[in-house]
Image (cartoon, rainbow, N blue to C red; front, side, top):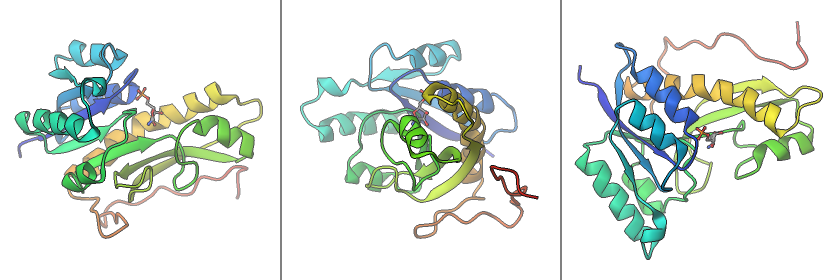
Length: 217
Ligand code: GRF
């Protein structure tokens, strides 16, 4: 079967982009990363795309008078590259309702919290302040409301004594890099399907137990 053509949209360092590039390098992975778009010139993630020989484009939102104009340019780039699925990976621009609707079911994002808790920015700092015991990350479909689309997958990590934002972010990021490629694969293979506001899995996807902090026998 032909591989799905995936675009990854970034604004910064691109470590999740790298995880997707690495996954897609495996012969049995059902996607190829066909395009990387950054809205910020000189985003470090662009170097990762270059190293992997992936077509890249900078579409700087500052060059456009309106959000619609910016997204029209983005849509043109996606169309020209015949993109099937779009992954946001640290893409720091809000997308319009119309863009989210156009790409409904084919546009996903990763967020460093167990949604619906801790939407928005400065999540690690806010989780530590709130004293939560479990943190994690979520891959979800993008809907018009920020960080609120149907959840595809989540991974949890403990918050440990002595954690600061950086330590917690690093522990979560390690899981992000595993979770994102897995969720993208399920989506492309039709094993995770958008059904209203939820994303049921195919019957052969069986979770491997619960994660609790403190451990529970
Ligand atoms: C990640 O923590 C992701 O969850 C959030 O932005 C960060 C991007 O990091 N949306 P990177 O650019 O993928 O390294």
